[in-house]
Amino acid sequence: EERLLQMRGLMQSMEGAPAELAVPALEMVIRIASGILDQPGNPKVRRINRAGAAFQRVAALESLEHLLAVAGFQTARDGGDSVAVFPADASLHMLAEMRCIVSDYLERLRPLHPASPTSPSAAAAAAAGNRTVA
Image (cartoon, rainbow, N blue to C red; front, top):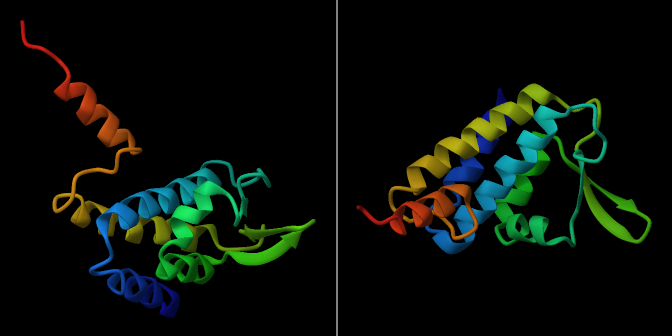
């Protein structure tokens, strides 16, 4: 499918992006997709405030904003806020494919760069590093 090729191309266009921006942004894209896939009937998880801190991590890399659009997200106005919305009739299959593509890219990136300080894997690594051996 053409949209899958577009998604892969967008991920390739991120080569060379600073890891301190890329890792948290990719993790956020995965969280956004997972939230929708876990609760597809919940309209709250389908709507993201574009001005919010979570979306700003994604917006730091233009390729990821395009990736969300290819996956089916649309920009809309909600009151005075600009929001990214995953419509009820958008393809959950395409969203799941996007999550897989992003996850694969993130896994290739992680061996080259430590986990972001906000990621669960970073917290686990920090906790493991703080353990003392008796």
